[in-house]
Image (cartoon, rainbow, N blue to C red; front, side, top):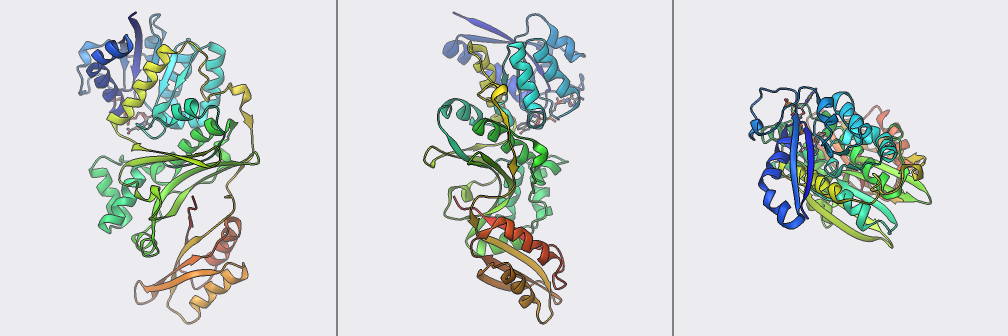
Length: 430
Ligand SMILES: NC(=O)c1ccc[n+]([C@@H]2O[C@H](COP(=O)([O-])OP(=O)(O)OC[C@H]3O[C@@H](n4cnc5c(N)ncnc54)[C@H](OP(=O)(O)O)[C@@H]3O)[C@@H](O)[C@H]2O)c1
């Protein structure tokens, strides 16, 4: 039997216009494979006269998004504007209050308001699809919610930001400084003009928080988590990491151990023998460690209109067939218990340390003494002249606790031989 579904789309940019084009292209597939007809009964964006790469005259334009949502025949509202506040937030909340299913790619909104949206959706008996909010075209949310529903997840590790991954790959391959690689990313469309949240780790934090909420069924407060990105790394860090046998990747890591949740967002060194070290350019990847530490690895395009619109479409079609209660996080939000979050990491790891040091007698001894005072032993050390007055000291430590390394770093940064804050990165041990 043919099923008709009526949707409205707010936001007609990169993802919105690709979604419309995909719906137009796949019309026959919906009919033959799903018995489904998707009707777009309203579109909305900021600028009505803007040129679009689909025929906008085929669809009813609304100047008022709330009027568009409130039409009686609308089943699903698709929000593709973005941002944790403002019009996108209003559209999402109004959609649910008007008892419409919601599909969104808005990770910032889900990270900040996900719990409130989930509660409202349960009260109103509607569902929320947010597959496109994490890792673009990789079906990670449905994998966690459906395939791992009955399995205990221990840890999730992800390369979740395509812009950062492109820049790190470019710095490695082309031996560029950060700013040159950023320019290249902008030129090729892998970075927006303002890509601060991609580069400072906030975007990765939003995404690992969303995945961890589903994986561990806990209510996690964004404000409890420290994070860092790649915007302070230099070509020297990439070079020395390579020399030591590692690649640098910005990771989001969520883990649970004895009910304690740890969330970390930072650049990590990964051995060149490990899978994640070879996930390059704008690709994303997620490793799910579950059961008795069985590993599942997903890799795919993490951003861009085409891959992201596949996830938007998957949500639209899945929601139209769901006749059971589809809780946003896999369980009722009443069962998401508040929990304390730690920024510490489990166990011990190796650390990479690079300090720019004044070329004076006693400089290296000062650094190694600080490490010795914290019982941090050195696995390898080398130095390289960066100019006549300064040189890089690079140390790979033996295993130690992150907490101890953090305290030692404070001491190192107060050391008069060191010119600027030392770069410290953890080595991933999966
Ligand atoms: N791009 C990606 O690769 C990607 C991947 C995953 C998730 N996402 C998420 O998808 C969402 C959309 O991203 P995008 O890249 O498609 O963004 P975009 O290209 O900047 O498009 C944003 C759209 O929202 C509209 N808009 C912006 N401010 C508005 C306002 N105040 N009132 C009405 N309309 C407004 C714009 O209207 P005009 O066209 O008229 O200017 C545009 O159509 C975001 O939540 C983003 O985080 C994007």
